[in-house]
Length: 326
Image (cartoon, rainbow, N blue to C red; front, side, top):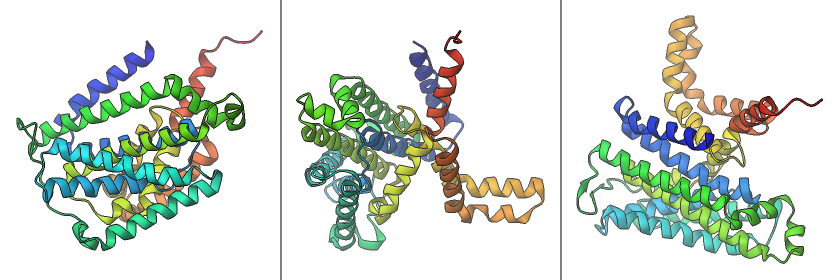
């Protein structure tokens, strides 16, 4: 019941947010939050560290952008095609990667993702280094004009809420319990008769599809897809978001995405404010050192908050609410 109340309060806050905060920035934040949640489904609940999730995010971004700009498809079909392309890329990559475990699995996903990066660099429809620019938003279902930032915001929010609800339902389903069992003790799951490879592949494809949905939505919001979306640094960014927020928690990746996106976009403003308050000019150039700041936060979280921000808060609340031992 407490979780439902918490989710309800958060939903009310995000419904009112665009009236006080720039909607496009909020939509970008929501897209990355969905991306982080999709990644967390794989690593946090299945125990598979993929370093190639940028392939699903960026590949779907290009497919959706091409469908909207060059094929002239309506936005709903563009999003569907982008999501399906993310799932298809995930099926191909997952079929190859799940044959190995541990660091070998991770390196295979990284190598395959980099192959897709070079395909996007050379393919004619992607625009090469310039990216796919000028993607129009169109009208959703022929009725809702998405050129209105406020209208698009609520569409993006609905997509993200549906994606998050699917993740919650998956985690709490019998399928999700098997994924947790695989993460905790894979040999035991095999001995119980579960087809572990099949479950891993299904989780991989579902995570890839949701990442593809996030990438497609980001293209619709910003109107472009670039090589940054498929570069390995994007995979590293989503790993950072998940670890900072809380690995294996439902809301942790959202918190992590909010922190990292805020730092990347608002660190310069924060530095200017600190410079004006402290009269230390060094702070004025803080925006140019965003990677240093995010790296510092990552080190602090790994050393001091191993469960991530949400994980540590949850553990603290659990200890404080548990009855004292005699």
